[in-house]
Image (cartoon, one colour):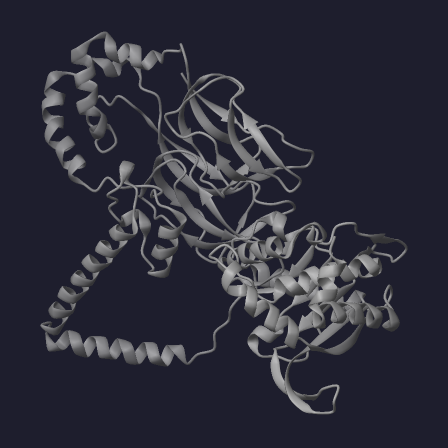
Length: 541
């Protein structure tokens, strides 16, 4: 008997977790209490054990996916249990043969004694984040009438925090899509309807021979159609390659085990598509002149249409950002403080270390040095790492230095934060920055990475700005904007002019909590660590 293992409660208030690593694979035999997977909550890394022995038949999530509490994590064939349906199919060999032939026809014809019935079930949009009651339908990944497999991606939806992909929980045929692209879908309301095959009925075992004979040609026709459906097997690198080339990975024939898709398969598929496009272009050249004139008329019409004003609704992350910025400005008395940093020595240090320590997983930019030195300064000025309550009667000094960084992503401004910078090395901070930057730019940041920030950095200099007045990321009390790094003339200790690496930084502070003297002294200490990297190294624990 195949049984789903339901992910249990793994912490107070935890409703989802990230699948960090599978410790088994499909087909493995496991024993009771054997570790199955490592999952990461917003509090700790948890190891999930097997509650009973058996053979793992299906893993419902890929590495890096977000698993839901109280939802199936994996399926296991329990040892010693025999499926009743399989016993009935083994009872008589002719009956088994009949069932194999008629099974494909049951889904496409209604004039035979089918061995299964079809029912339409509504898929209810589940909870996709704490406090989220609706989301925007960004893209349907299937169409009405498509056959889908279990766990196949159905739609991309945008919450006020991230882009989320909704998978199918059952295999079947899409009967109806309840929303159009751009509409707002409600949590716990039907998202789409799916036709699902029900269990076989007893009379189905007595299918007559004539029906079987007539069904054979139809079965051949069905089997001749493309059978690739559902989520393709591929590594993250292959998926990135497919996204960059705008290729639907599920359409690429895989040459690996179980249909796994490799980069070479994508290259061949792309070349085949190019050949098809070339032949299509030849056919277009040979088309009648009337068709050419019609297309030109359509082009002129579309050109006129494009000149009209475009109205675009503000939704998702952009809508949340607008609401939060208005609330921050209207409730927090901002004041700005600017300073100039001479980063010549730090730039030289970073350049000498960049080649040795940079990799695909770690980009040793200037940001890790800014964050680590800021954490050291926060230890001396804890009020900069505090939060005030709504009516400004209590001030909470945060023990963790969760430093956020504003990222200009394709879905809007996101501010993921690096947790516990005070306990991380510069290389560990760099690895987290690389991970979160890649996730933010794709719009797929985990909710946990957006929560619990204590102070933020906005790197406007990456786009060319020098001075800004950043808006505080409430409920934090301070934010800094980094200007672009410029080579400018400055006087040295001997009064000589020399080229130096200069950056302007702009602070915004909550004047209810922080005064000008505090932010100036804090900024001076931060400046000392950055202008004299040896001081930063000596201050590290």
